[in-house]
Image 1: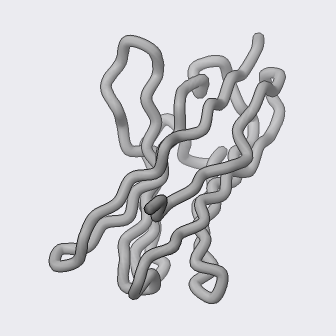
Image 2: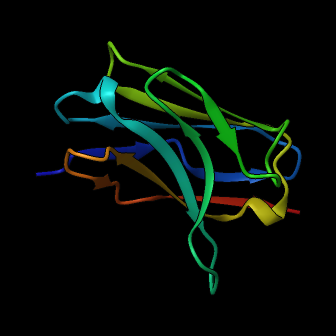
Length: 116
């Protein structure tokens, strides 16, 4: 059973924008902290942005002011609006659902490629 499905990745020119979506099929979605991670080729997976159940957000320094994470609990979906993209943003982006007591989930990932 697939619990998190990402979409919205693709190829974009430097300076462009993309919006990623993560549709969740999990119980108690609104109680989860939802995050976007990314993994570039040859590098470790890193946290990009997180939104908790009260919609407080945190961002990696490298994306502050350019990316915005949001969630729609009614649609059990989390979004990542990415603006002013640069080649260094090229990576596979993963959605993550985390909670201290409930099962944790990862999506399958969506490729984002930014050309210079």
